[in-house]
Image 1: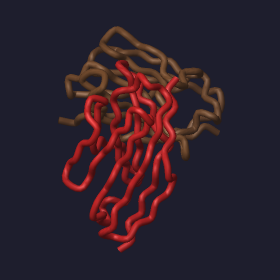
Image 2 (image 1 turned 180 degrees about the vertical axis):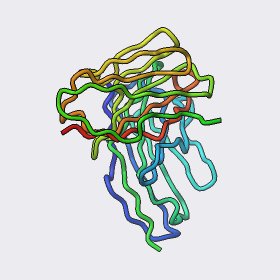
Image 3 (image 1 turned 45 degrees about the horizontal axis):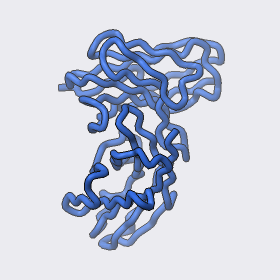
Image 4 (image 1 turned 90 degrees about the horizontal axis):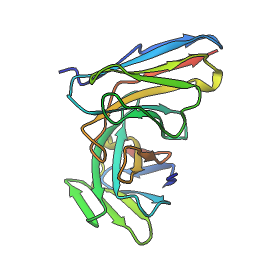
Length: 111
Length: 112
């Protein structure tokens, strides 16, 4: 099955700085890559996703890039704020219902 | 609209006991999923139901059974609970595959 590796496992940034989380996937047939944010004690929520027919997607302060050749994709958060502190999960899927998640990155934004 | 709801919120079981986790959605979504979340391991798919009347195994189905009761409800059953099943269980729904999955609030299960 699909194997998704996520790095780093923890990330501490100064408020206002950028944060970058990277994921690699194993199955070249994967074509859907969502990112979920989970605040402490809450449910995961989708923040952005990208499909394999595009290389980059932006939504305000967050962006995702995809390199299909290298089989990796990244989440970029600019101008980080305290409310960005959470666990972020990347995931990958082919043309089916199975989402394979990375192990998560705990992001802490220092005031 | 309640979105995705799960019951119970928290449960303690003894090894060998059985229980059913319930999930309901009012989003008129076709697909429903059960995940477990363990520290350092992300979310792992247990079972999913692509549409009413169908269920399929995910990544970690052993020790679990599911029922898609109707379009709204998808239950997860532990027939004989084991300590290794201590986890947080999330139900999720989506309109179709490769679409946003909406998660329920989770059920925290402790098996002693």
